Amino acid sequence: MGPLAVPAPTLAVVVALALDAISAEPPRSVHPVALFGRLVARFDREYDRPGVTGAVIAAALPFLFALALAVPAALALAAHPLAGALVGGLALFVTLSLRMLLAEGRSVIELTETDPAEARQAIRALVGRDADDLSAPELRSGAVESLAENLADGLVAPLGAFLLGALVSLPVAVGCAAWVKGVNTLDSMLGYRSKPVGRVSARLDDAVMWLPARASALLLAVAARDPAALPRARAWTRTPASPNSGWPMATLAAALGVRLEKPGAYTLNPDEQPPTVEQALRGVRIVALAGGLAGLATVAVTWASAGTLSEVTDVPSWASKWKLSAFVLGVGR
Image (cartoon, rainbow, N blue to C red; front, top):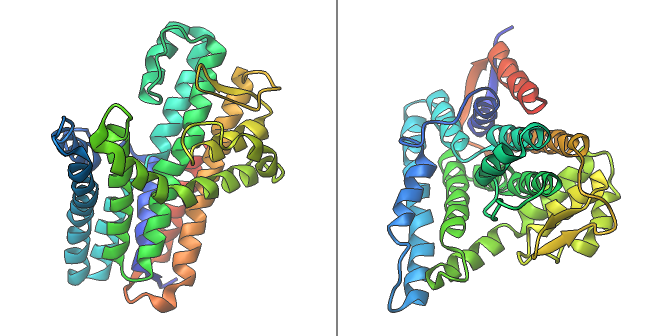
């Protein structure tokens, strides 16, 4: 069988998803998102005019991060479409975090049964709450909540942004995904009430995540084979302070038939019991499948939009199939 003509953005998505499924993330010392976080940390201080300064930070830093990833993709694309797709895929990969999310969530859940003290340490990678006094069911709840919320932040949002940008070009697609990741990172580091400089970043993140959060809720309901979970969850979507995080979390709570609770902050599906180990692990599988659906949808739409895309490259058909198979197998773990 001869080479297969593939739009460069489609191939970039397949490369990124395959890398996320089968490889570890780059070391923090060279990870672009971690390096961006170090840059953001330099601005985490008090200012005389925090509102104005915060607006400049929110406008400038994500744009700079987008340029940092889009320019290499553009240069590679100018050399050859295949090179552009590979570099673009690598750039998109560093904005995704499904495999790590699933592994950390599964680890916390399993530790609640064997070593709750270690689970309290492990969950710090997923949530910002004080875990010292959390019970095993509360630890499982926190893990499931984080899985649902970070499906939107760590996969659906960058893929959705990439998809929109791909209607223009591969470098724009990479830049859009990186910009969204930059906005998310700013919010996670500066978007607290105790930090006035982060107020604009928090509002920007609320706006950017409006659609991905709701799309993630839909994907979770489909992945759970329980479409009615979405309308059932509507009663609790506004319970968390965030206008967006309640959608995927409440939908997963409804699909699992469990209560998810952050002590002193919110309770989702309050008439049910906290998740057991088995229920929480099912939540991991649902999030994995929802992530797989998001990835496959992105591949399909970028391919179907090939008529609007200028970058088309030839890859061996076996290579394309191998990368997609690796992604499907990876998210099913």
